[in-house]
Amino acid sequence: MARKKPIVIDIFAGCGGLSLGLYHAGWNGLFAIEKSEMAFETLRHNLIIKKKHFFWPEWLPIENHDIDEVIHNHRKKLRLLRGKVDLVAGGPPCQGFSMAGKREETDVRNQLIHSYVKFVELVKPRMIFFENVRGFDMGFKKGKEIGEPYSHIVLKGLSKLGYTDVSGKLVDFSAFGVPQRRKRFLIVGTLHGKAGKFFELLWKRRTKLLSKKGLKTRIGVMAAISDLERAHGETDSPDSKGFNSGVYFAPRNNYQRLLRKSIQQKRVPDSHRFVNHMESTVKIFQKLLISAKRNVKISDEDRLRFGLKKRNTVILERRSPAPTLMSIPDDYIHYAEPRILTVREYARIQSFPDWFEFRDSYTTGGKRRADQVPRYTQIGNAIPPLFGEQTGRVLMEILENG
Image (cartoon, rainbow, N blue to C red; front, side, top):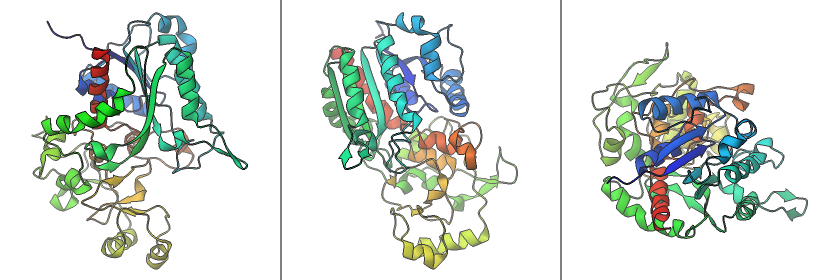
C-alpha cells in the first residue's frame, strides 16, 4: 500500500521555490498564498498547471492573495483544516530585516510575522517551517539599546499556540549543494515531536541525498552555469524583441545535467536573455574582469579608476559559490564575460531546474520596484528548491517518527 503523502500549505510562497522543493521531496500542496500577481503567475504556470502539485480548495480562488484578506474572509474555513494539515511553511517578506537593505523596524512588511502566527493559530498544522534573512535574529538599535529580535517574538507566539518544541538556527545554503553563500534564519516547530532534531538531521542527511543526485555538497558558479555562456552562441530572444538569448552547450557536470533534465531537445533556455549593455559599460566590465578582486564589492579605488558609478558591484569568482543573489541583477558581473547574469543563470545559481519557466517582466525600476516582482526579483526572493527538497525530506522523517 502506497504511503499517504503529507499535506503542506505554503504562505508567502513567492514564485514557488520552497513548494517545488517540497514537491520533489514527496509532499502534496493544499494551496499557496502569495500577494504578488507576477510571482503567483510563475507559481501557477509551473506547479499548478504543469505539476498539479496543489489540491486547492473550492472556497479559495486560484489567484494571488493577501494573507490578511485570506485570514479575514476565510477564518471559518481555515479552522476546519485543523487536524488535516501536516505543515505550514514560508516566511514573510524580509526587506525590513535585511542587512543588505535599509533595515528599518518601521517597515510595514515586518508586521506580517504576526499574520504568519495568526494563520498558524487558525490552521494548527502538525509542524511549521519558517524562513527569513539572518537579520531576523538580530534586534533593531533603539538609542543605546538593542531591541528584542523578531525571531524571539515568533518563537514566543508559537509557544503560546502549543508549539512547545521550537528550534531556530542560521543556515548557509552553500553547504547543501546550492552554488550560493545564502545565509537564512530558519525556525522549525512541532505540536508533537522533536523539532530540535531538524538541524541535526539536515546536516547528517545532506551528503547522502546529494550523492544520490550525483552532486557534491559544495559547488562553484562556473560549474552551475558554464553551459550557458554567451561564447557558446546566441540567437534572437523568443520573448523579447531587440534582444538576444544564449543557446545551450553540452552539459559539463552532474549539476548541469540534473537541472537540464526533461528539456534535452531544447536549444534556447527559458529566460536566458542577454542585457543590451552600452559599449562604455562593456569596456568597464572588461577592465574589471582583468584586475578587480572577486566575490567582494568593487573597492572605491577601482570604482573611481574605471568610472563605475554603482557601489555594490561584484565580479563573480568562477570556482566559488556566488554571494547571496539580491533582487537587482546589476550588482553581479559574470565571472568570464563582460555582462550581468541572465534570469536563467540567476535561476541556476538558485538551483531552479531549467523546465521551470518564469513569467512576466524581466525587471523593473523606479517606484514600481516597491510593488512589482519581475523575474529577477522572483528568483532573488526564493528559497532554493534544492535546499527546499532536503528540508522536506527531513521534515517528513520527523513527522513519520513523531
